[in-house]
Length: 313
Image (cartoon, rainbow, N blue to C red; front, top):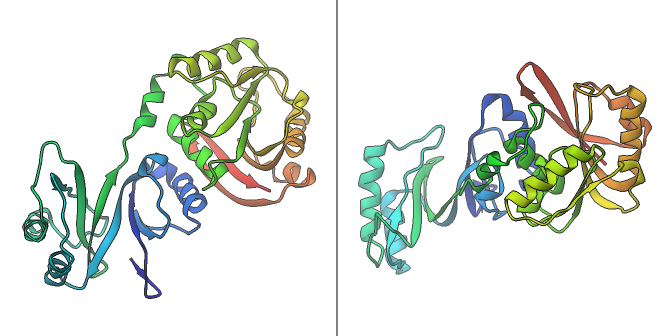
């Protein structure tokens, strides 16, 4: 909250499966431009918790104090008023407050607020806790987890990226610029495209196999999105995009040579300024030989496979 004596406006609480820790940390780095080690952090960037599959909730800090009594005084002196409010309990990894103590404390804070409590249908949710020796109070927003609905898409492949990983990859690719253009030139059943289009990102997908391309189209249509899938060869793409996400084919069902994989990288260099690439093997030499600079990376695990995600400029 206090970093270099400067108040950070928002507290974010995150969570992730251990095998996705690296992916979560890379996503947070791209969204917030800071290294994240703990499962909560402060930032002056206001980003919806629902933007990320790993952010549980956000507290937009309005007041902070060295003691509960000081915080109560600030609420009273500033005539804080809410109609139909509710305090929401949340636990930090190294929480300084137990639940029973928290109940007692927010009851005291609630007395300082002008307005009625509504525990069933609140119009506003509030958050208060003690962290790093200081008390904070602010408006609370939780992740709506709407992205989980995409797990119900009618078509999927066993080797496709998980929905959660796909959403994180989109955030890694676009960062805090939702106005950029995005291409997934080997889009498969459209898992990445679906996450991007749900965030209103200008995205297109290409898929060489007509049957799989059709499945991608059906997945988008199932959720009411327009068709942005082209059944075609990525090497024939004429447009230029800000960023490409490529889950490099690795020959699980259809044989592919290293030469063809390198051709995919070469075309990605031509059609996009930035590349987020997912590989099963170390392809750093191929990326560098095509003029890419690898600026960051992480690994994700699915079953017995380890995939490397590299950010390239």
